[in-house]
Amino acid sequence: MFVRLVAGLVGLAVLIPWMVFGGVPAIDLLVVAAGLICVDEYVRMAFPEAPGKPRLWIAACVLALFGSAWYLTDRWLVLVSVIEVVGTMIFAVASPGPIDKAADRLGRLFIGIGWIGGCFLFMPLLRRLDGGLAWIFLLLCLAWLSDTGAFFAGRFFGKTKLYEAISPKKTVEGYIGGMLTAVAGVFVVRAVGLPSLTPVDAVVIGTVIGTAGVIGDLAESLLKRAFNVKDSGTIMPGHGGLLDRVDSVLFVAPLLYGYAILIKGF
Image 1 (cartoon, rainbow, N blue to C red):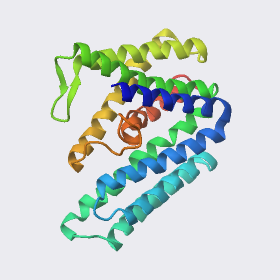
Image 2: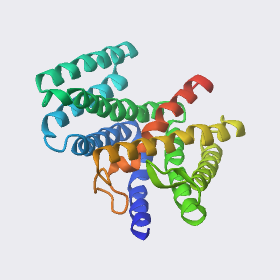
Image 3: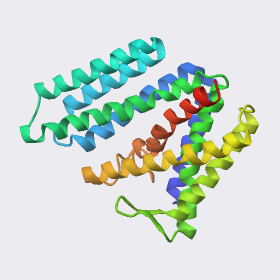
Image 4: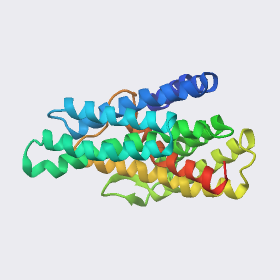
């Protein structure tokens, strides 16, 4: 636990100044770097025997999604997404491997593109909203405070298993603790940088959208069990891979962006 805590604090000590002083370009660069690292970790899990070609294809698709979302219109993003669907099927036909596992291979390709590329691109989109940096901190609070609260609440009070078949260590008590810390984090960010959010918004965002982070964590645990691996990587001591740390962020970011533009009108 000590190594986990120190690694997390060191990561925040680097991440926060980078985002605060670097502006939008720094967020874009951070997302690109994190996205490519996550692609590499995912491919190593999903295609352990021959990761080379899938890594190149998924990375190219993820970068294309990033670029079209940030610098082109929405119609271009739709077009790029459709082209990637068709292109991925062509890629699978050109290098099918064992025919009886072709559908499985195609599904693994689509998961890598849609999960990492489709969800990651919402971080810089949040940064471009009014009060954008506060939205980024809100995203991280939802994802990481809920995870931290769940860890400690589960460690000291956890008795009732949440979803033992997928994640034996997660408990209902941990989930409740995680939601309480997530709501507290939303209230803090609201007071500092997002005064337009109401107390009701804080509770809804902390509980409903925060729950998406728990589901994201469970979804990655499900994939890791299917791929028969314990961690996605070893880049963060005590935490595993980067994908292990951002799995909840990937689920929370699209919902938070949707809440910002559809409910609050940013």
